[in-house]
Amino acid sequence: MKYLLWLLKAAIFFTLFAFALNNQQTVTVHFFFGTYWLAPLVLVVLAAFVAGLIAGMLVMVPRWWKQRSTAAKLSKTEAAADNQAADSASPDPIPPTIHGL
Image 1 (cartoon, rainbow, N blue to C red):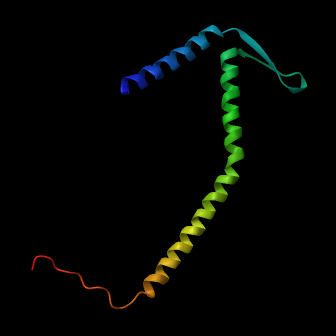
Image 2 (cartoon, rainbow, N blue to C red; image 1 turned 90 degrees about the vertical axis):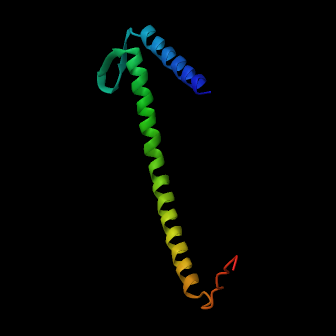
Image 3 (tube, one colour; image 1 turned 120 degrees about the horizontal axis):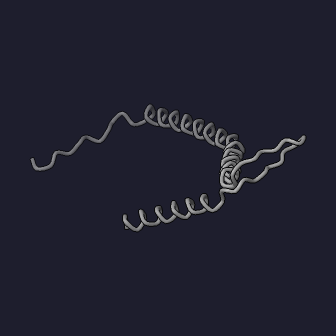
């Protein structure tokens, strides 16, 4: 199974490498106000992929912060409840049994 995974990773790498080699021609990306960028097609595709990753992460940041703060509040309330339960526990704990004597 380990070798099969390694083989799959190698196949993906060589496929992407062949894609990069086949798309070396220069393309023009036009921006606003007459500005443009001349770059190899593979670099443009990579830049678009990275920009999409960054945009997706930035959109998710507020939700992550909200979930972290909610989890922190819950852990604080659980810790407080555990402390109250320990304080109100019965003063007579069950004595340990000694086996074999």
